[in-house]
Length: 158
Image 1 (cartoon, rainbow, N blue to C red):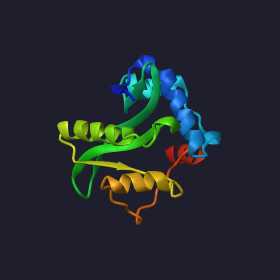
Image 2: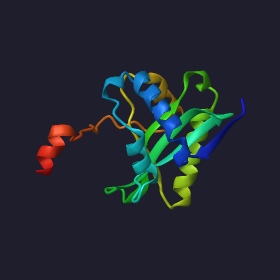
Image 3: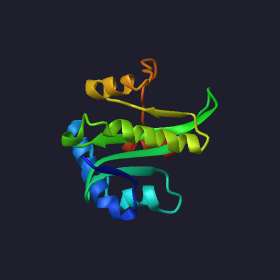
């Protein structure tokens, strides 16, 4: 397996969207998948971009991706990346690609003076949980994830 890991470019948007859709299907969340090429283009490459992406390629085919963005953990006073997505297509799992991607993100974070990577995992996704714990990630069962979206967000914003 000769897979290369690259920083995503605007021309990669269609392949990222395809992988995101596959990830949504894997997580049983395809019904809530609404991301468009335009929205992803703005988030990753537009003025005031808010996130970054890595893509793994086997030849010209994208086989994995990660999307992450900077954040600040107030209580610890630490800057870091929040890993929004990491996904590896089925045929490429178990070959070390996930670890390679995470190590690249960690090195990038460290080069910017960041000290951590945070992320969330669906509770049923034991293969991912086991993988992260094997690499030394610490589980925090005390925190709960909340979000304001759609009507709740619009109501809050007034």
